[in-house]
Image (cartoon, rainbow, N blue to C red; front, side):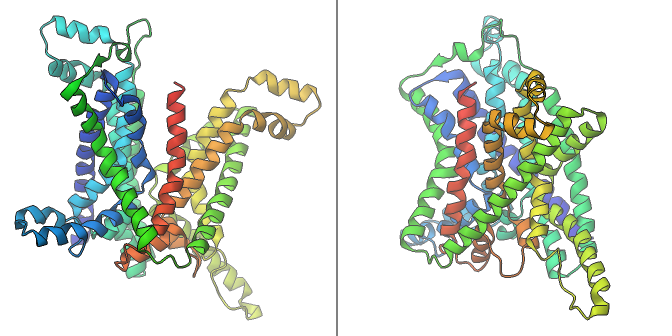
Length: 494
């Protein structure tokens, strides 16, 4: 009971801290980019997305490596006799507050993107009406702009909280006892699969509440008439110190969320790290992620095309159910896959017992279980892109293909897929990167002696070999830039 209360309280407290952190970073930067014009504004607007390339656990490894007691920062502070109260925050980086900071630095783009979109769609006329009523700029921001953008901001914050609840690598490394670390401890430490399943059920209930709240926030997002003068058409020009202040406000999250850790990882990789088996790890990771992504997108194509051919409430419910998978923590998916697959292994072994076949992990100890977990977790990502691509193809094209003698499968392979090539490639790339970053599901379900970049970085960090973990971590981050670039290009077309 005491442990359960600790898991609940730490999870709630971490979520609260991250909610404050992402709002504190995301809302002001979105406001500055939307409302002001200054040198470097366009560049900063997309650079603010770069921290999304980082899994929070890699950011945690990197900052711990530079801020730990024997690291360069505290070594320098001790050399210059820095007061204890100055060094104290760095000494406590591996704490709940430190985990919240790491998560906030990589998750604030959720709030930034949604808040910025909401700000840009607001009417400048409403703000000018506030000024004519004697309100100053801050009062207009607080009384008019924020209330109208509140649903979008709330949706971004709730998405960040969902990622926080699902996080395992960061809280495990920092020694913070949350639901995810409790599930792993119960399963691995005590070998108690039913206990891990019970904790997973509690976490699943918490996630379900977050899903309902997030979807409710999204349904309340409203965009205002294009007949009114939009806020981005009336942005205020800044010069001098005010422009510098705006640049600094937007640059700091980029500096600490992307530039500093990337420079550290690059330096350690080039000059200090031992890169044993890196190529084998990269091959394992890319082959697994690539094969899984192709399989997941193939399943999404079948479901999306079936919805197009045979629209019904049943298929609509299936699509909605699929959308829940991405919200599930990876560790919950892993336990959910492990229990039925393990039972199936026992059944197979029992059937083969009369032939003196040695019992083994026929499915749960193979890549089949890993790929199935990825399917459950990331099918929603692929399905969203595929449905979006199919929706842009007119139904008359299907009819024309059938008149030319093509079967329904032929229409899909010869007409639809070429027309929606961009959506298919985007779905494959995003699934590939998400799978590459996935830690808990891979850690639990992988076969023995099979490592990926994420798992190896986790193992090395657990052994306090943070510098040796940098090559694998840097590979993940560099690949993680791909969806960020795609996202930026999509935003640029709007």
